[in-house]
Length: 113
Image (tube, rainbow, N blue to C red; front, side, top):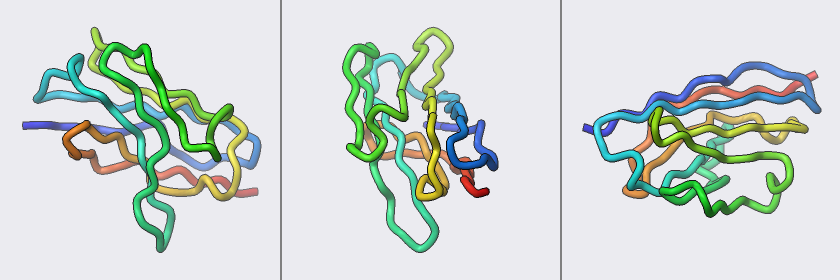
């Protein structure tokens, strides 16, 4: 079955950086479009970014464009999200998600001074 394990979250000050990782198993990762989504306290899921199966096409939510970079390594079955210039409003639980909607348990990102 699909298994997704996110890691790399933590607490950082505004302006800081984090790199999130998502380890995928149980499906043909290299054939799937993958996304990152997040859920802030008391809010619904928010889509952030999508990358196609080959890693050649990416899309971003306007508020993270230029600060976040999605990437993947199909040989390692890994998805990444490099997050720079973090803001307090980026505080949330971050999930990777398959094109069929499965997601992992998430990793907490807290941005606070």
